[in-house]
Amino acid sequence: MKYISTLLIAIFFPILLASQTWQRKTEVVEPPLQLFQSTYAYALPTAETLKKGDYLYGISHRFTVPVSSGFEQLFGIDGPVINMMNLGYGLTDDIFLNLGRSNKESQWWFETKYKAIEIRNESLPILVSLLGGVAYSSRPTLLGGQVLEAGRDWHFYGVAIINTLIEDKIGIGITPTFSYNSHLQCPDVVNSVTLGAYAEYFIDERYSILIETNPTITGWRNQYDSYTVGFTMNTGGHFFKFSVSNNTAINIQQFNSGAQSAFLGSGENNNLHFGFQITRNL
Figure 1: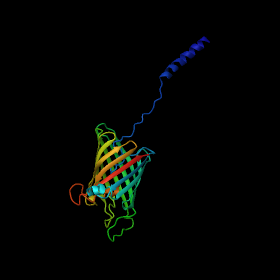
Figure 2: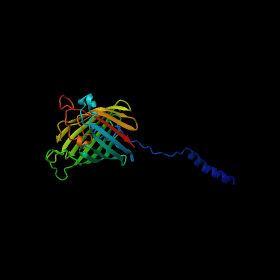
Figure 3: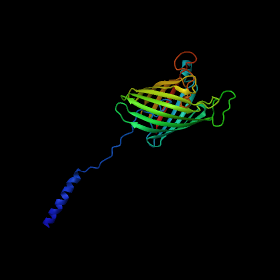
Figure 4: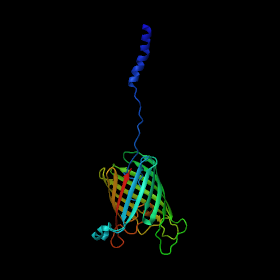
């Protein structure tokens, strides 16, 4: 019996010692790379998506009366607005769905954004997303006597979105965009290609300064290229954006058609419009 006990101790004692040093290995999950705080700059998209299962609700106003109207009309705030609402959903961490409506031409749209490339680099991280959308104008604004052919009230657009972040302070985005059937006032279908860009300077975790431009490279453009400047405020639950722009459109398809007035200059062709946007992640 003595020999059996010694044999059992000799076998199991090393196993007991080894079991004291074993630890369960946990897989380290790297969080998604995030360069901007929201899914859109003003009208142009960023490469950001939502987490799987998250919702986003947004409402935006762009006042049609220009800021130059002065205090008598509270710098345009007393006037009517172009209103936009949208509801976004994170289908996966990399796929973002967005449904929206603008009261300008009663336009509805649906778009999908896919985060395609993520490059982690301390000096110059890069996110690349692809966005495709379709829009329908149920109450188009037409010229006198104009009659639309069947299907002319539908629009299609595609965007390649390239984002980077410099020194954790300056976010930069480029958004080359193709728009099919850019503007309904054209007698025939006219397309356009724009090269949107924006830059955001993050003052701290809450405040930033944001500028956006969208020059037309070829095809249809209204009278002028679009420019928007302003600042943003992130409260953690809500995201506020205040801006002035020479374009009264807010959603990307109508924004890509160009602006009706100049951003800089003087006289009747220089009309800036105050804008306000708020989004909430749910």
